[in-house]
Length: 424
Image (cartoon, rainbow, N blue to C red):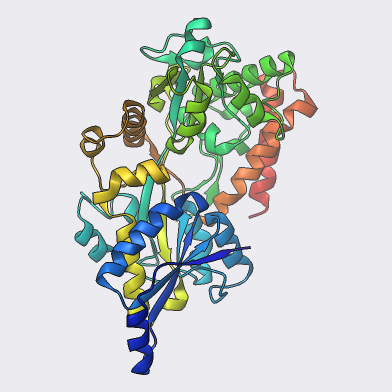
């Protein structure tokens, strides 16, 4: 259930509005529990210049809010007027007309700092020739290293680090989760799903193993060897229910895991596991190689959108865009990172480097920005949502099928993707 949390409203202004027969401009804003203190500060700044408006916070998980919209509609009173959404979800929301068109270019000009709005994250939120969300934060994956574990396990953290040269426990990644596995998949230039020049969907993973190029075959050989080592050792990595518990426990100082891939938002949990951060180092993703090809993730991120039910209501739309701009106000970039774990798209690394952030926080941001520069554009279309369960089920099936070779393991993936393609 959502919890509505009203902010401070000036009673005098409310009374004036009522006495004149007018209704105060009122909107609601979705907020994650951990974001509430910062959102309250941002909204208070808006109220300073707009004392006659009412802004309510609806405490709800971002994905919960989206699922509520999709399961009902944009007019549901429990759904917020302003809400956060991951980049890829715009393609499931936009066709249902739940996102209002916003003046993104005007907002970007007011805030400043965007070198080329349309070529960056901002342009990714443009669909049907309309801007349907404003950049909240950019994100991609980075590498966390436990220096104590690395020293104990003779893992070198300087220079390029070849995944195949590590033992099975040195670097732990939930390969069944495509969000993490895509870092390795991209290194082999494998296309899980995309449109060809004729506008037709295709996937490299419907090909026979022999039809893959040598780099792609090497990728699956490395993946099979990684699974086989964990299968032999009886770890919990290839089990949906135990994978994360295994990864988290092994990253504690004194245990076997030296390297893991995660996002900047994971820093607090990483610090907890590494003697309050004393044993924690951060590396850009492309410092890790697979078969001598650097790992790369996606240029991803989140946006802030306005509920389509506000369209035609000029005052409400204006207020919604004002609060979005205040939430991502670059003047508070450091606060946004410290309180929300988010890095703004229009703030250079120098701002963070010259701030009062800790060295660890600065290193996380620098590594993330460096990884973002080399990251690839993520595929953005509705059908890609089918890739997540298809990849997951195929990879996890190895633990029950127990393939004896790379080719047998790949056959499980090929069968799953052939079935997926047939469903379109």
